[in-house]
Length: 112
Image (tube, one colour):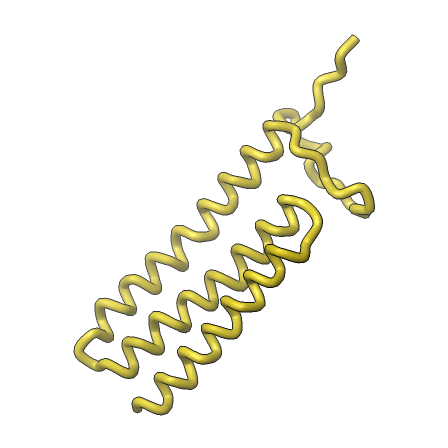
């Protein structure tokens, strides 16, 4: 089981690395939120679960931590994205689709 735990932890570390690379390379806050949410949620889940598999006495505690991460990370990223939208943080210039223009709270106020 220790080897399985190391493999799961290693896969989680790869996802965490790819998420951090996405945060560094992507152009705007909305794209960075997606990289930060998807990759790091799965990476943190697999890493903590792998530690629980390597140490069977810790399994239920690490599973609870992993489930907490899976529940709270997407919610906090959604709150950050919504706050960015309400604060009129601009999209990247080369963005193709802007779904935020349909929401009343995210419309930019025209100054006359």
